[in-house]
Image (cartoon, rainbow over all chains, first blue to last red; front, side, top):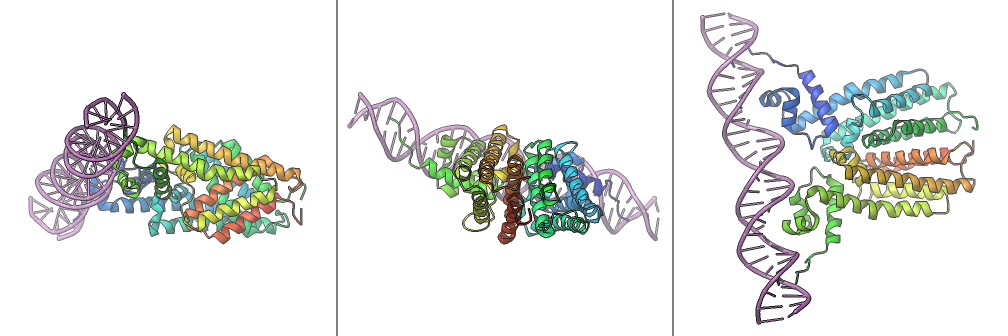
Amino acid sequence: MPDIKHFDPDATLETVVRLFWRQGVASTGIQDVVTATGLNRSSLYATFGGKQELYLAALRRYLELRSQPVFRRLAEDERGLPAVSEFFAGLIEARCSGEYARWGCMVSNAHAGAENSAPEVRAVLDQHHRELRDALYAALVTADCQGQLSSSADPGAAADLLALIAYGVNLRSRAGADDASLRKTVTAALDSIGVRAAG
Amino acid sequence: MPDIKHFDPDATLETVVRLFWRQGVASTGIQDVVTATGLNRSSLYATFGGKQELYLAALRRYLELRSQPVFRRLAEDERGLPAVSEFFAGLIEARCSGEYARWGCMVSNAHAGAENSAPEVRAVLDQHHRELRDALYAALVTADCQGQLSSSADPGAAADLLALIAYGVNLRSRAGADDASLRKTVTAALDSIGVRAAG
DNA sequence: ACCATCCTGAAATGAGAATTCCAAGATACT
DNA sequence: AGTATCTTGGAATTCTCATTTCAGGATGGT
């Protein structure tokens, strides 16, 4: 009996993700969303609720479709340090070139804004951090089992450290940080964790 | 002939800094500024210009009065690695407890928002980054001269790395990161740079 | 073909934003 | 004391924002 939706909520949400990701929630108006998606206000509100709920849905979608697959690949990679190295190479690549260059990470961006005062947003931030750290930890444990770590390196502390560095990359990339410089910096960090010539 | 100002622009700007620092520029209204400073709209606009100029003035004041003194102290410290260690201890302390706990760093926060699209803002961001990196570099060179660095450590790369970590601390502290955990992470990073038992 | 149900479009609402204006008050030089 | 000049207070203006409303159109099961 009911009429069906005349649009794809999934594709719409993806468009919304990109808007909030690039511009942030505060500087993105519902009008921007309407224009970008081609949707009508009514359909938007009927489908997603208000702006806050829309943002939250977009943030969760970002975590699920952009972050988690990368985290999973890292955690399940059996190579150890090369997996970590590749993770950072991909991160810097994504942050500095291509379609999303200079957009940073939507979750990292959320840290700095006022949007993080909402408990639901905070929960996504915490989840993202936990999953990032755990993925790094898993890869580092794999590396350790294969004797790739210097004897003094603690996988737990190193995972925390690399997670922090990832946030730094995300942040600085938004201000136009040079990707070659970021790559060099991250390489130095990984060298200090792994076995080295002088170690 | 002219009337004089009936308020202290410097004290006013300091109040504005705290507003923008805590809430960000997008979620802070001129009304908030008027209420917090007790000033009148007219005086505000006559003294500082519009909101964008006010934010820029506040951001510059933050850099000058909050960041640069700390950078200078770090750069001029003759102790080497202990100076770096103390810098991070102070950073984490400031970010996690006291009056400004969970506020993050105003400059780091600016990275993530839409305000960084303005060239003047971007310039402050770049200046902050350069000065932070250079201060760390100076301290690390001092450390190197005193034989405090492991032989494989490059002061330049290490400075870049530590700067990135500082941004990570600033960001995560806004989401309520545990200060003990941050301390431990940073300690691990410094250990990997300095001479160590196993190195 | 009917019609309950949902979707769609555009206008309306109302709150809150930044900025401007102007009359009244205060100042310091002459 | 007079006065030119700046400051101040608060209302006024002009937008833009998020959200709601509602009439009309489309759908698909009966």
